[in-house]
Image (cartoon, rainbow, N blue to C red; front, side, top):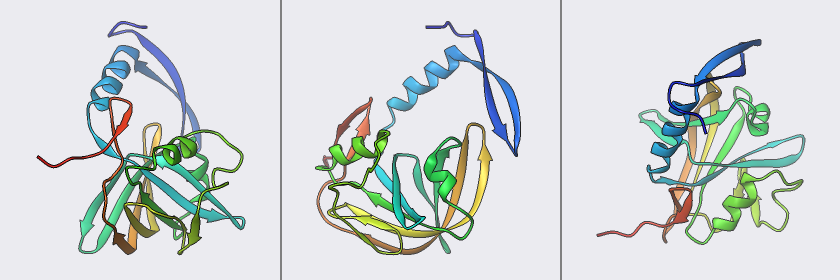
Length: 179
């Protein structure tokens, strides 16, 4: 483990150009640890491309605007899902329910067919069964942001269901309970 102030070099592809950046590895570790203390919900973001469903586990999802309704995703520049999203393309946000921790793990790993044995329907984008909520959106724009790309989406549909959400805190799964 490196100490704060030690730098490592990483290559990033920025606007088509390969750039090397210096990263404070101590700060990198500190930020990862701090963000692990931020409780988030978990989603499976999906799209269809080439006649096949595609998806990935994502916790960096947020509502941006209610008028007009917009959402935002943050995907690694290396994400295979990002490569399949294009301006105007449609994506789904499947907000996971408390019992779907194994679904979150499956979509977070590199397996050949993440959708194998997963019940889903095509609702404009792949919609997983038994989720806590569902949002359908069109890609409005993408914004480079360091080693990630922000995807801004125009919301087309949204639906919530009952039950408890799947939560993620300190690299573990859990759920929310009201006081």
